[in-house]
Length: 406
Image 1: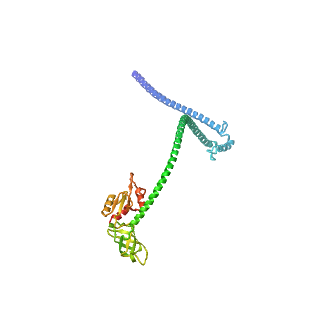
Image 2: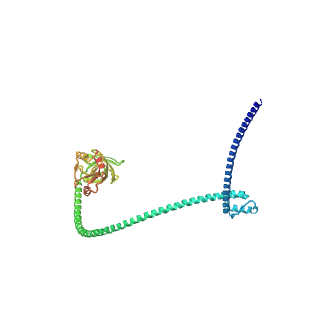
Image 3: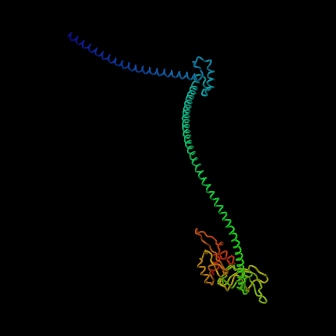
């Protein structure tokens, strides 16, 4: 029994020791973990302290630099120096606009000083950047100017070469021009001599032509005089068949079929004693019909003896018994062409000739189309000038239409 109790006691103690060692192991491990965490925290705190010391050292160095810039002469400025604080604040306010009256302590003023210091650093950095940019721009401008100078030198050399070549060419051209001038001068001298001879010949021929022209003018005048004499006749060309004194109109027994045209003037007369002609006045044809015409009174010799029925009319250039002769100059525009107008005139007994002669009564002046399609008047043509010399009556295209439309 005692042995069993001893064994049980030993077993119990063994169990208690195991429990104790287990608890001790757990506690040791826990302490170990706690020590590890503490060691990490201490290491972190140590690093923070070192960083703080480095920052403090840097800040102390920066403050020393600022003190040097601010003019503190490197001396330590502490709160113990209270007697000079106001003077230093006044100096800082005058030197730095960022330090104001509200900054009553050096610590408060240091904020404005630090801002001014930072501004100075920023401005210095900006000025440094601008300086570098300006330096680079200056170098670029210098390089560009050098390139331009090199190009200009090359261009000047080329221009000088071109100028030398142009001078040589101009010298050759001047020599050739001088030779040409000499040749032209010789030619001019020859031409002047020929012109002098030609002038003399022309003057002689002009005198001969002038004499011939004077003789021709005399001949033309003689022809015109003879024509007037031929055309002068004792009998009338027509008779006034009616008269309207109030309207100043008279009606004649001659018309388009007799070769009459609008605008033809007539002398009006009547027979007096002994078959003598008594002038009554003048009229002008205004309207032409087939066998009669209407004329307006243009003048009256005696208002008490007006133009009336039975009076006679005459015109030295109008012959009722003679077929009028027409010549066309150019193409007439409008309703009729030359061929149609000539056919109508011939159907009424008129003569259409090819050229102007002393027997021509009317020259029909049309228009001449040039190759460009424009129209030119024909007053400078030889037929027109001849018609004027012969005293031929001129008709325009529209006047011919009025003449032949009845």
